[in-house]
Image (cartoon, rainbow, N blue to C red; front, side, top):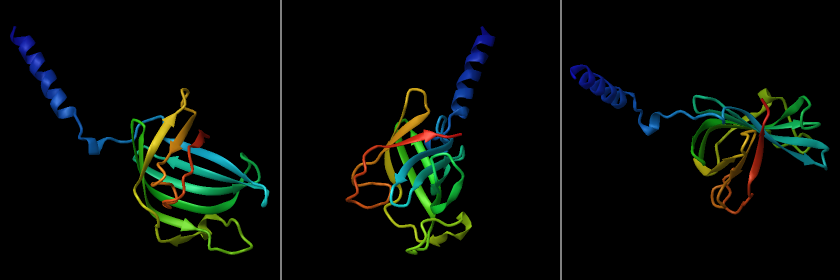
Length: 167
């Protein structure tokens, strides 16, 4: 009987010391990796690729790349941002800490990534929305309330943004 009591006590102690506080929870799969959505610009005849790279440590890189097609080599970058994210169920929060953008020039729509210029982080951060995965976890819809949109502009209701896994 004593051995059962010791095993029971060990299991209780293991449960108490192995629990993490909510703030220690790292982002969980299936999010880690590279995700993108492509938008064709018929005026420029290029694709604007909106890309997220999610890391297991809760950091993200968010870029707008320019390509001739959805899958060809990158011609250049329009913008790039670095920050953190958190995903709990369908609740998604992102916080951008550094932003790099193309210096506005009427003749350029992209430059090499290293030529982007650091700019002040504008908008309302952190932003919170819903991330809803497809049954096979190969796509997700990112939905922001109208008052909390990716560019931080209050009057910009964009609806669901569908991203595809590319890695």
